[in-house]
Image 1 (tube, helix red, strand yellow):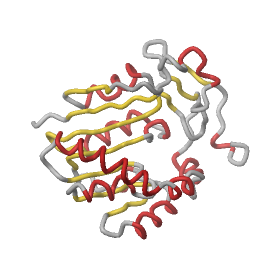
Image 2 (cartoon, helix red, strand yellow):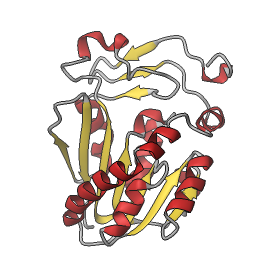
Image 3 (cartoon, one colour):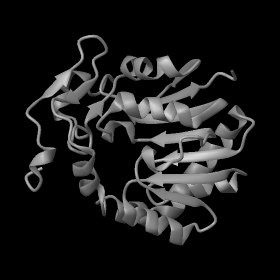
Image 4 (cartoon, one colour):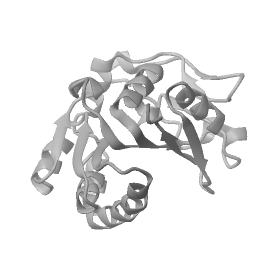
Length: 227
């Protein structure tokens, strides 16, 4: 933040209704794009690539029974492990990632998939997917309402969204959230609670299921109506 004043903020705020925590200043998309180029987490992802690929393959194997279609999108795919795992589970798989360095790695490691560099705006507006994967991304985005609306349009009728994010309302952190190591702007701008995430998704999906999680994270399945 010291290197880029556009990322600075003055305070954390908490919603009086749902308890969601967020910064009082939203950085511009351009400032965040600069921040995420050559993201510091990439070496760590590469070091555990095989283990992460196996984990994602098991998770997507279970998810594929929730929808009949086989079009997969990972929003915030990083180096592409979930995208490749989806392909191995029979999906036509696409990954979207803001960090161009990560996209280059993904294309080299997993060339049988499609990888797109950029935000959701980089995808054609008429594209739709049967399973949309959005793991640990929503807390990073500057305009949550717009992001959720765009996500919802990408889910095909009868499709499903899996969304995971840190849970600032979890019993382990809710009373001392300012000392939670996950509270680290400008990476994390909005830290939802379970009610907060449900409220954000509800206008766009027919049914929302919040999965049990002993750790301070929310895992939500959001189902699109078949029209």
